[in-house]
Figure 1 (tube, helix red, strand yellow):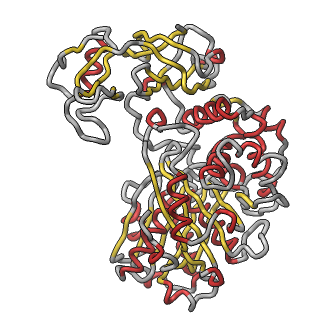
Figure 2: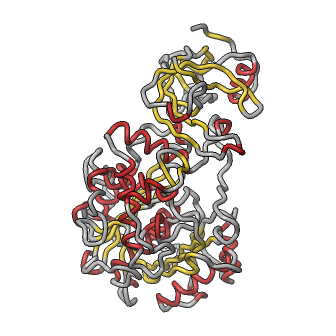
Figure 3: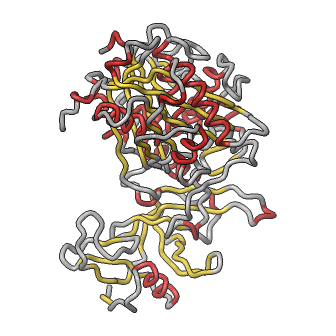
Length: 383
Length: 128
């Protein structure tokens, strides 16, 4: 494996914000995204006119970086809007770190915004998949349901195991004032929720909310001048399919690959992570990613998530905000995964703060278990 | 299994559809390695070899994954969506018909047939 340790900790997040999460009636996606950027810059103590790099992707802008730069009234020297689904923003963090390190930009902003909930609910912007569309998959849910069916078949998992993930997420959310759904639920509630695409019921599926988020990154040599820098210690991406029918095996994602490379770059491993933020669009995701990122062996995830072990007070702090299942999921959730990891590392998480969370993992997923981006974030003490 | 000439000089997606309209479920096979390819492409994914030829699929398959897409009766009712492993190796999304969607189980042996689905011919599967 190529040694990428020379890219370790070359950039840091120095400002982070969310805005309009849950419901933001009367606000459009660009307005929400713009406000998130303003709040993240304020958090960093930087001015709008200091931003010279923009990374953005949304489900409603075909050229999000241009739309956002114009809206902010800035003139980027470099921008990008790679769209690999919900994991895009974690890939943008790697892009931004490279651009900062290369000297292309000095202040990088990564942003996302959506008003999908108040604009009428989830709308896939995906084109119909050739050789799949005729069979009417209700994507993305159908694709994740197929993966769940295969996982249950191969490893003897049950709907109760999947439900444990939703119950743990809700338990975290119940302590988070930013979370959209906070009433505690039990395994039976998940099992009794309306079937959508077997074996997944409504409570196995992520929320449909509004919300925006933004992150501000600078080069590491400047980062110590800021109040709470959190360094990007490792980052890696991988993808190998677009359609679920073309995924090599439905029970193993290429998070195996992204995780291994991100940890190698960071010089840390799964056991070092104080919090673990995973893109939980559906309950099966959390199980697959815990396995694929090395927190447990393949097939053991179903037990790893059970009995409250990933809930508050459990063995591993997973999705401490409540995740996409219970906190916020405005179409593309990746930047919120990253925000929670960074906030935990800074010590100012809006919900339960894990003490001494100096090393946090944020893992993004996009498409139908298609793109996987793993990032490791750490405080100055972890350098 | 018989090797067939390409029906026209059109792209492989259109060629597949043209075969399907003739009642034939055709997939592709590399002349050099014998490996089968689905969905159809002008070259072998991963290697780029352009020696693909159309062959008739055996029509034998196994259910790899399955789900019931829940839909209210007034909108047509619930239906099956499955991933089928073809005996030749490739995997495809499809539907198992002729049985309640809940009754489709992973590992079941299935047999291909061509049916009209949403206004066009499609490969679907029934229990073997």
